[in-house]
Image (cartoon, rainbow, N blue to C red; front, top):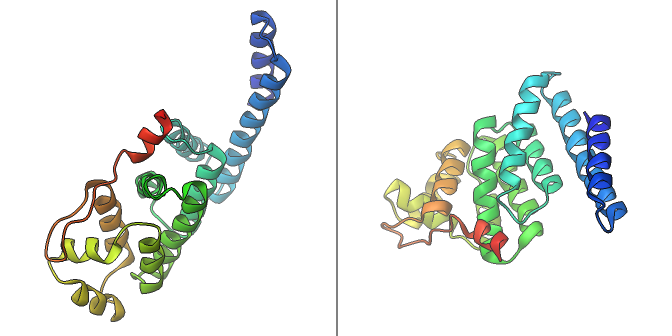
Length: 204
């Protein structure tokens, strides 16, 4: 894949007579190399299932184009979430929520890393965790208020449910992804919708 792409890129640049073709070529090759590295890594993680790995990396690439963040970072976060046991179909929606929150809070790439780790650790534990929810809240979204509104209870009650292990990781993660994107309103008070913030940041 990579060698063929290199040849195509060299030919296009030479034909076009592009100024600064050398630096453009190097940038292009670095990007192609990072995609190929991510693809090979994902193939290994998926037990050698080439078609599945290719389809998933294509999904990440399409998503990356809508964000101001680097493909290498998003693919790394995607691989980590997969390794933590997150269902493949939930990974891009989770990354979108993480990206929107990071963009809204001004934490950028650093925010993506820490939030992906928080969601991943919650996933692997199987239950909502006060520690991870605090980390998500510190990134700029009232995680407990979102979950409380969705459950139709107070913040105090949702805290008790979380402490007693009654809130599953899947429920918490899917609730937070939806709540970050769409906002919530209920017993705990209104929370802001952040869906689309990342795309707006890319445009600026």
